[in-house]
Length: 420
RNA sequence: GUGGGUGUAGCUCAGCUGGUCAGAGUGCCGGGUUGUGGCCCCGGAGGUCGAGGGUUCGAACCCCUUCACUCACCCCA
Image (cartoon, rainbow, N blue to C red; front, side, top):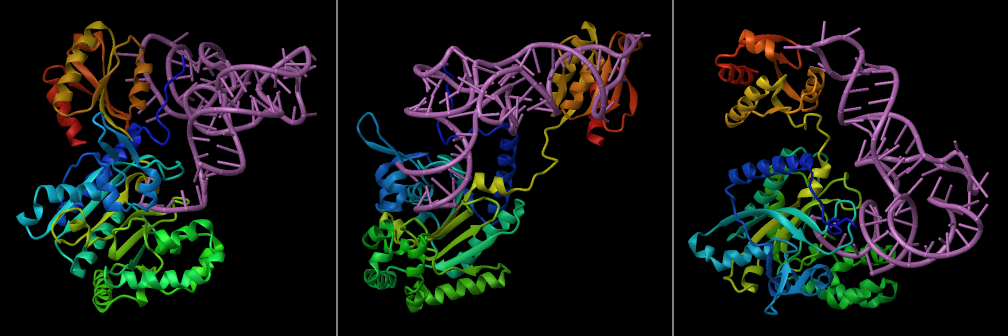
């Protein structure tokens, strides 16, 4: 019989990593809550139209990476490739804009993109997604970036590089786009086929191309920062200044355009050197026209996404990342096993991690097991201890052993474990 | 979607130009005297060498096909 394997690009998160997920998640919740963000949980499937309209028809994500299928009634559904669209949909659907002027939300969960898997890239991957609606003030750009950096370093990441840029607004970006197109038209021949296509579909993406000739061609192209209107210019310089006030260092990357069409003004990315080619752990930006684009009110927004798996891959190896057991009961003989069975289960109810072995293995084998389970204590007892009405408690680190009366055993043990 | 690399015990890998090549380390189980773990010593279990086909007297090793994993490109978290 052939064995059935997981789908390509879909990974099992094994217990040791699952534990890291849990820890990072709890840090995220703590940090985000402190900054006033509330968790929202949205479906992992949406109508395909939602993603087409938000992410952009000509983006790679929509063109070739979405898991889209027809439901039984022939409605087109898509497994979400990112969370922002869903969160905005929910924001609009529940009229959150009229409930309060500023809405701060975050969500954590799996995203799906049908790309070829490689290091730091999977077809199902998890993101921590943060969105803030209702304010365009540069303070909020700075604040949300500050929170992101605080969260990442708080999770244990080191050597992070923050890159920021401004992409302009609906007023000044088209002017810049036109300038880029005019520039590229003159030197089309030196561009790769992809970029020649991009001139018409998405000219700014040429900035992202790594083909050498394209890179050298685009190097002399006009820069977005020279085209910002005075409002955008002012906004960007304030963002920079607020970031500096908050002691966040950054580098300005005027060529960063990002792969989703909806960004306006501030765009940012956090890079690390620990991930191979996939060096972005987080990315985000402002999207002032998107909410209305999706049928909502004219409400500005800004947000970012953190790649969960990438974050975890950057975490330094932690020797303490081991599962622990509080007590292992080595019971010898049927009478002791019977008592032990009741004992461990009562201890578990009291919140202790307690284990025992139900076989008739030797004491040596059982202690070996206790060691394997990283147990703090081992409780040793057999017929002899039952006769004498006292058992032996061994501290597995120090090898100290003490005898404890069988009477009130459970309470004594809980006390000792808690004192440890 | 394109290109490179790799698929041998649970895990990490060795297997030279096809002829004891089915191995090591680690992990697992047991033992080193009667009820005490981690170190050390000894023993044991465990693999249709990714799958299918071909060449050959003979293939883990060569050829073809296929699948998977992996890295990179594209793009992104």
